[in-house]
Length: 434
Ligand SMILES: Cc1cc2nc3c(=O)[nH]c(=O)nc-3n(C[C@H](O)[C@H](O)[C@H](O)COP(=O)(O)OP(=O)(O)OC[C@H]3O[C@@H](n4cnc5c(N)ncnc54)[C@H](O)[C@@H]3O)c2cc1C
Image (cartoon, rainbow, N blue to C red; front, side, top):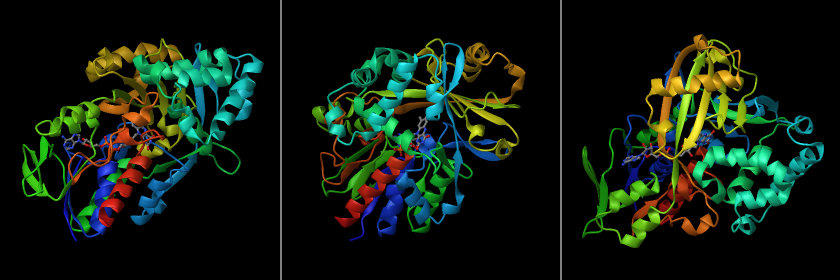
């Protein structure tokens, strides 16, 4: 029987659920607070081409996303390019893409370089991730590679990415990162990543178009304030724009936002569970430069004096000609939303960042900057703690017809568009089968 289904959030989870539910004959309404679809994978205009606000790529083994692209008939628009990884440590950049790079990684004594290599190989072989549930990443990485490898390689990354939560992060989270990146390789063992022509947002828009083509609705500028079940079992979803009623609601926003929407009727225990998982925010300073900063695509920053955890030169992955010849660099920082950097204006962020960039790349000059942008996301990364499985709320809410399909429920993998699509489509399949 065809149902009315309201989906809150027009990111990849909401759109892919909506796309499949529409195809299954349901009447879908997607309500998105922002004035664009794509959520964290939204874009801006850079010299006539769209570009992600927050750097994005896919791994070659991201099968769910490739499945959606195939269904939309857009497979020709996926590009797979070689990339490389480096580490900034003690004022120097070290390449770290191949086993040979690792053998030359001088911040560690030779014996520890071998341990580091073995650690990544052993980590990738772990099949039973449940066995890691009870360990923090810090405990596990120390066990596998020893103290020195931990201090040089892993501790700065955990600190940079999770700040005050670094010591709480689950071994499962770290295991998954090692596994994924190691698995995204070409035939010759080279690191390869995939991208979508014209930005990830174009894929989000194509998915939204697919919903509309099937008779569904996708409304932007439609923030939801609340949703609740009526006496007749129908769900009423409200915002400043008005209200819709439906047989079911799927909320795809961050969990504390879902709690705010149902505060009026849900039990305190349930609300507390939705508010239990912590989230970090993200700030990205995006620079459009007249020349390249370095030849590294993904530079991990293992130096706590540098205020960003990664320097990602997108145009070492996609050609600069795509962006009018500009070289695009993202400086990325995950942080609690109360921190100073998250609350700076765009100008303050640039001013604060320039001396650090100059220290990292001494030849860099502010005159290289053609344009810059600062993007912020309040709900950017759930903090995946030890024993995280116990914290994840069910996809089915406390009343029939309420469902949650949110980034924080993705586990043992970490959030990512591939998993947003996988989970969105899996929920749609289940509801369509009901
Ligand atoms: C810095 C950074 C880098 C990343 N890099 C990658 C990468 O390289 N590859 C990759 O695959 N993934 C990457 N990700 C992760 C990826 O962007 C997310 O996992 C994915 O986009 C999540 O999709 P989602 O639909 O679950 O959530 P979201 O994209 O967060 O969508 C939720 C939507 O709900 C909307 N919303 C919020 N409140 C309301 C309300 N009250 N009413 C209506 N709508 C509301 C939001 O505006 C948003 O559009 C990155 C993320 C960040 C922050």
